Amino acid sequence: MTVDSASMPTPLESPPFAVMWDMDGTLVDTEPDWIAAEYALVEEFGGHWDDGRAHSLIGLDLLAAAGVIRRLGSVDLQPEEIVHRLSAEVQDRIAHEPKWRPGAYELLDGLRRSEVPCALVTMSWAGLANSVVDHLPAGTFAAVVTGDVVTRGKPHPDPYLAAAARLGIEPAHGLAIEDSPTGVAAAVAAGVPTLAVPNVAGVAEQPGVVQVSTLADVRPHDLAALWAAARG
Image (cartoon, rainbow, N blue to C red; front, side):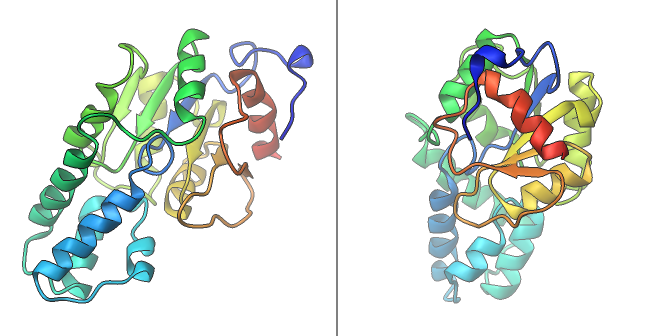
């Protein structure tokens, strides 16, 4: 989508007044790492795993995903232990430098420089989220909501409602950036206009959502038009 920057107000002069970012698959390219970790864990226990099962878990609350892996992958561990095993593997893979999704770091940095508040809204637990946040300038995120601090994770609206409350905005005045159907469902259920950037899994066209193929060409001044398009 092309926006004439000369005619657009800055994001602070009109909504969105804050931006809420998904992490895995949206900000950082960790989905292949999660999938590889799932395959390795299931193989360790002699079970069967495939891409269809792996893709169905993208964006899902981690304990819920672990329950699926335990049941369908024959992994004889408690869900909490499955989450810890997978998270440790992914964290080890990104320990030196996260693999940023195209344009994501630049857009996030542009929002920071423009003083537009951002929140990280991820189903990863705090340890993994912090390992990504630590690679960013201090103050990049005004709030961080992780999967281990909400009662109900994505696709429920709770994570986005919590983020909006911490940012001090109405959900409808923010913009969510998501890559998965599960994450998009959570944001839409919370009443947050959503920018979908599909990655591993496709996202169906639906009310409340506008799609772009990449963030590489998106700048902070483009977000007002994208927010308006998502609102319909």
